[in-house]
Length: 587
Image (cartoon, rainbow, N blue to C red; front, side):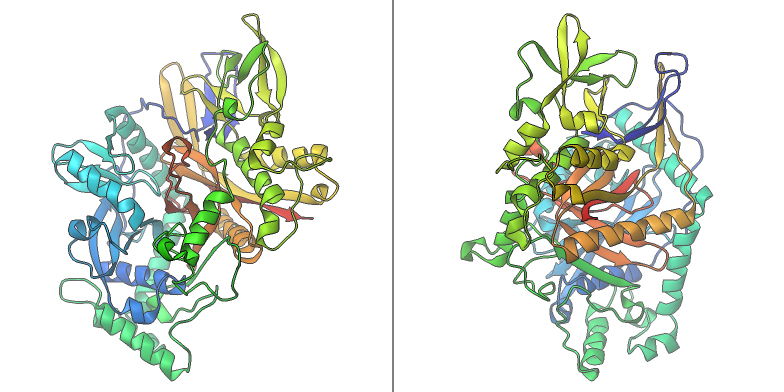
């Protein structure tokens, strides 16, 4: 796992000055800075409006037909930020929904959970959790013994607080330490405060204001053939799903358009979707216009195995996601290649210790290996010729062989009478060692030059015609000193934030949706983060920014899981600490 980058290194060998890092490691550190101000809250988003957005996402991204959507119901809980302020409406949606915990505990559930902004200074969407992850949430509540509320320190992360004040990670059903909670509190507070100063939260509020104005404008609603939001809000504050969808069906029928719309650019109408939705997945035997047909694949969960007993299309796509990326997040270097007999694997320490032992490759260089392996061994199965980025001679025929070659040991120096080596790809990405967590550190700014320099030095003639491109942002500094970590947010102009989200949208739609090829995703889990290969996406386009969700692969082996596995994570959420996507392009 990796720190993505550090923005400034001052006095590398000085304890007095310390080290400033952009934290993106898959480990954790402790904060020592007291909490002060509260983040900007915003005004509440009506529950019915949040539910309509969720329903619009499912329909517009191809997750459900109008006929099916008419039978859907909602159950909801509020998710709070780490300061105890409303953050998300956590919406459980699907057929035959009862109460929240009863539906969640149903082992045959066909539902999904959407995190939609609870106030108008939070992003429209943050994360999507498919039914395959419900079991761990239910087990967490059982293990905790009681339930008070949900908390979230970052997009994709869901914590449960019990009645005794203990906090549990629902992904692992384990208790979160007090020190970790303090770190998340500080980090989230600093980030929200800076986003308010940047003007990003006010721009998000403008989107919400526009949506509410359109939803309650009778003239605009009538021209689109829709009822107003007030007209489809029940007395308990929930959305009248049947009434809204029936109006949409009637309007579509009047226009002569089938309500089972089936292409990658699905439709929206009026305020219902507040933008446009898209979804796609890298898949074999691709069909033109198959996105909305739930018999082919489930956009809410590309790894849906429910039709495996009949060897269905969803099962084949779910298996392809595994087969096409066999290395997963397995970072142990010795699994692929042993260090030379006269030394060990290591890296330069980002702190003060010089060379150190590091037996993990790091998620940054491994993500490049995973992507290169896909192009060399899988691309021909997805409608295009294979591309050799690995060497100028014969192409290795398995992902493991590619990893072995890219992990060729490079001599770094000697420590304590032993030689220290680092995998060659990690030298290209300038991956360092973090002594406190024994993790790798790869700056996000080193991913593109690391991959492209490798290609220019070592790829085949055709491979040299290709290059990696991407859009990436790391939005926090972590200042390390003898007294601990201090987290400082990085300013970003709202226009830069907006343009970044559209660039990420273009990358994932172009590579996954058009070219049928995976991307590398860059996303955060609190103040730690990760690079992973992603093969599926959902996009929701607002007015100010795009919400880009990338699927984090679910793997049966827990020791090779990517962070936030088995879910869609919004890699463009203003509340995230890291955001980005990288793809391979022919020049």
